[in-house]
Image (cartoon, rainbow, N blue to C red; front, side, top):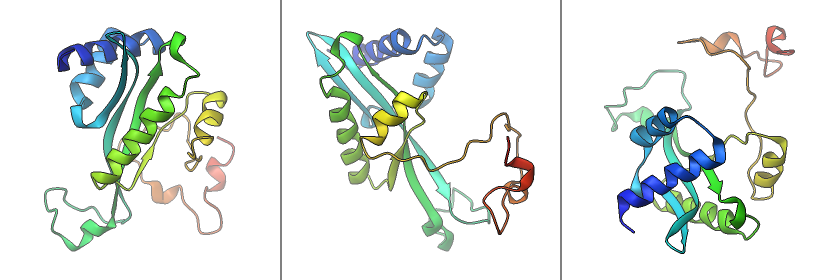
Length: 170
């Protein structure tokens, strides 16, 4: 199986699992597919389980740091993470520990590449439980329908509580 066939089969598995549009799947794979940051399992010439890891850089500083200047003193104020997405296993192959193996593999790979952590966004309560069993924890508060370009999150944070009164019941 060549590299392009693996990519095509991963895209098909994504489509069969998540039922996303071909355009969306192509956009994800065209933008983020990196052979070094994928894990997959092949059985009988077919990709039966796969995941994609996308690098993210999180700033721990309030100051903007130029990404081009990697040698600046502020660079140590970044955490580098891998966003795991498209975690999918063919229905007939579930319950065999395949995804657990792939997650362990990508975590080892991420560690070896110098990433600080991996993270994911479970789509349901049952998936939250599944990933909690794999030592993932909920650590972000989602603010629904707050997708505003260049939003000033300083207004969101308060000294006494993590969210201002304005956002507590969102």
